[in-house]
Amino acid sequence: MFAETLRVDYVHSGGPGGEALTLDRAVADGPWPGSQTQLIDSTNLGTYFFEVIDHQDRPIYSRGFSSIYAEWATTPEMRTNTRTFHESVRFPWPTAPVRIIFKKRDAQNVFQPLWSVEIDPKSISATPGEAAAAGAVWPIVESGPASVKVDLLLIGEGYNTEQLPKFHADAARLVKALFAVEPFATRKTAFNVRALDLPSRSLSVERNVFGLQRYVISYDNRSLRAVSALAPSDVAAILVNEEQYGGGGIFNQQSTVAAGNQAAEYIFVHEFAHNFAGLGDEYVGNVTYETGTPVKAEPWEPNVTALLDPAGLKWRDLVEPGTPLPTPPGTRGKVGAFEGAGYQAKGLYRGEADCIMFSRNPVGFCRVCQRAISRMIDTYTR
Image 1 (cartoon, rainbow, N blue to C red):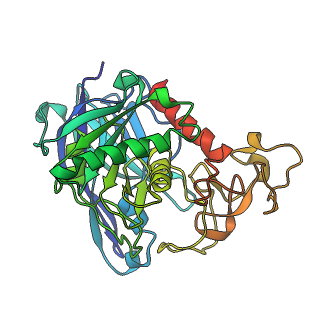
Image 2: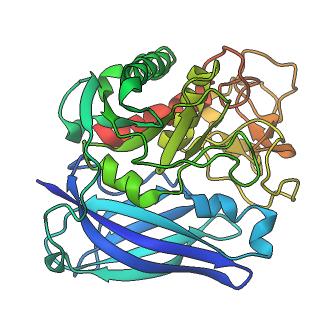
Image 3: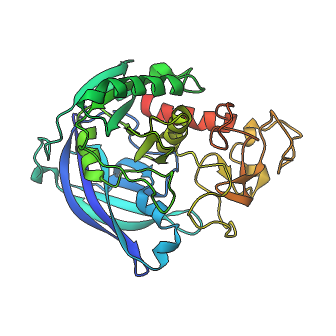
């Protein structure tokens, strides 16, 4: 049985001169909240991937993920400026020295080695590596042991002591919205949901990320990881005490929502789907990422396709016989391949005409996204 979590912090830098990862430190990160059996990632999701290799050269843990750096690297600034981001990976505490291999997708979206580092757990104290801000953890949904559930931690940002009742109400409201849509409604017993009361300045978030006013994210990775260790957590979502529309979500990293906005329920569910299941945006335009480039490879996101091989469409089994691929835009109620996804009007396709990942219409997740979410739940619970 795995008892503790080992967290590796590193610095991710890049720009016109290339990309580099540098070790910051390795620390204890609290009890291991994840599965005791689902240790090797077979989802093939994420821009990056890391493997923990034992002394017999065997992978003992792996996970795909994305990062703020990965998103920044798609902006024009990357061609002229150098920036540095703090990142972390977590895995069960090993009994002997291990090698961590980081991989990144190439132009064909195939993972290629990027960096490796040796970690000796005997050189790390098994007690928490840093004192996190004091915070009270309280349950919203309790379904069972952390090792067989998805453990979602809601973290409040910008709520002072007098506003904690508001945070509690916001958290309850947003969780209710999440479990009102499928497949979360049916799979609610697969989740534990906890919330964390924090002093208002324990964690910082930024608005106007990459020049997009509505994009809200926390660059404060070290603080985020420290406070997340206060409770069992597989996935963390930050509730920001703001009314202005905004949020963000990065696969296997974090999601945020301006909890006071009138569209907060939608934002929370949409951004959580990025964070938890690696779903891609299906809408077109209105981003600062570079778009419009010719599509040369199949996207890794489970709900977006370049339709390079219609017969091998990754959700082909959900498509009714006779449905044309590409699918005419006026077709409703069917799974197919609808052009317009991943911010691009041409060359990328989504599974249904409408979905939470496409618009704010009250249509729920399409069947392609529902299955992708269910498969991710299975990786934590089976």
